[in-house]
Length: 193
Image 1 (cartoon, rainbow, N blue to C red):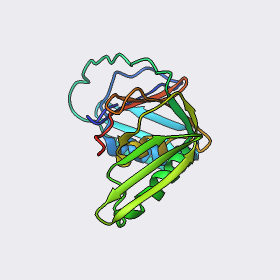
Image 2: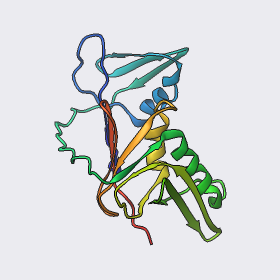
Image 3: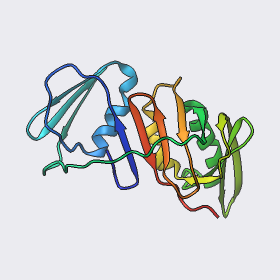
Image 4: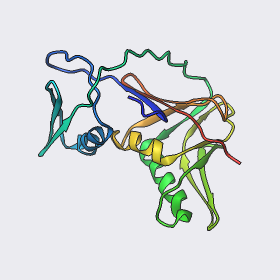
């Protein structure tokens, strides 16, 4: 899935018949992700609609008209440099770093891997804030910028005990997130000043 700012691939085993590729609106995917902790997800595709059942929730959505584009993305190899951090710790650091954004959430943050922590820094005209998350650092990683409103939705759908494996080569290179074997995401960093 992509929206032009992030690319996510999730592979999960499924029971049932194969369905031709379909374009599901982002809002429907977000609603399904909000309920994934309530049990298994059952998907049923029609010619123009998706029916999703999870827990007590039922979600109906129209599919986007049009043919699914045939796309192939050659995922870069996960670099040796990067860091591993628990998903709840990183989401909490994003939330704490956004305190200077007067309730609107951080537009962009700088991640600076250090000794056993990843520092998450944010700044506005109102001030600066910094939060940290315990992490395992692999190699020397230069600070890089991300937009939490792009990254956080992909992370919120994961179980709370998930360990995130970030691969980072440079401040302008794609940031790879891997949770082997079935989830990977590629985020483009933002320029930091």
